[in-house]
Length: 316
Image (cartoon, rainbow, N blue to C red):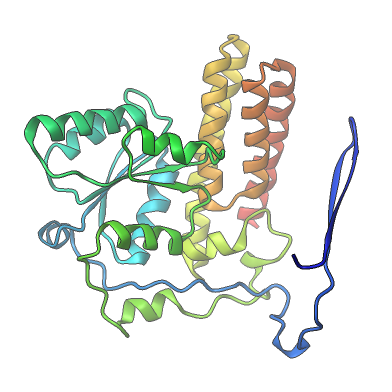
């Protein structure tokens, strides 16, 4: 429809090249954004309410995720969007917290111990029917972004799906859809803070060669290098622990556990924007699901190298 063409060149064992050819009108160079700057996503926000205030206005969010880094990132993203939250470290704890009736919405990971996201959703829906309680919106937040996953989540009783890496604008839109009664005043200080100018590329934390997706990290930490350093340091500690568990699982011949640990690393890496670590973890998970144990070992070693490089960059 645009008068273009798509070409494909593919060679087994080497890879594929897809080419899109379009003839377009020449634009105004003055309107081109300087290379290295960050596109700013705008979203409404407000002063962050306290837990009791959020309960009174029915806006308190429950975050259920077994990874500490994921819980920390989601907590900060929710705060930037103007929503208070409490967290649970697994589905079993999440169900117990939900039973209190304090939460307006649940954000849950899918793959968790004790109760996974699907089982948690099923338990909540059963309890709602039995207790005749109002339906709680449940939104999946997962690194599994296959095309069938959103439909599967809805079929299992969830109300929405958010893929990792998660942008605050996406999160804000989902929350405002399911909590439309929450008021967002115009021109408040929190909104100005959320939409402040991004850091320049002269800032050593945000150099283009960094092994981090700069836009994602900036959404979480803004221009605060100390916050970004602490967040990434916590992620590295957790990821090294998960990597050790992955290697132990491989040594024991426990492929399902190796896959689970690779998935944990992949999800947390996506949320903090650790793109190289995410790519290696995703490759390890895919190799595990394909039953290719030698490939899992190889990609796990590459994952270790990616974590080492990230650690050097963080300390630098």
